[in-house]
Structure formats: C-alpha cells, structure tokens
Image 1 (cartoon, one colour):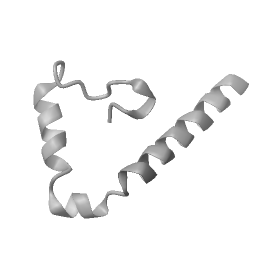
Image 2: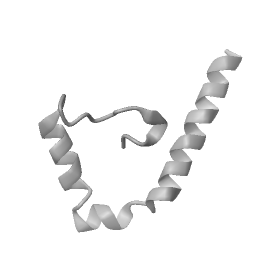
Image 3: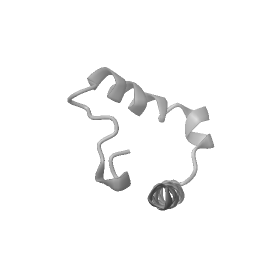
Image 4: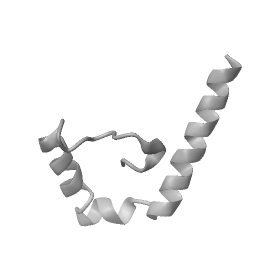
Length: 59
C-alpha cells in the first residue's frame, strides 16, 4: 500500500489495529485468490492516479 505514490495510506504507527487487520485480511485464501498480481495492481493504481491528476489540472 505504501508503495503507491510514496504515500503512507495505512500507517502502522497511527493505525496499528487497522494495519494488522488489513495484513490479516489479504492473507485469507479467498481474498488472496481474487487479488491481481502485485505488479499489475501497482501499474493500474499508478495509471489511474496519473489520469486523475491530468483531469484535475484541466479543471
């Protein structure tokens, strides 16, 4: 989560319980089987963020 845009979305120090829950959640076999490969998801988030920034600049 923290890799995208160098932002900490779910900081372990600020939200320790939520951070632990998120880590546990993505280890659930059913959830894990539905998640795209890490690189594919990372590329999707980056491209979506870039499009959002371009739209924001256009106004």
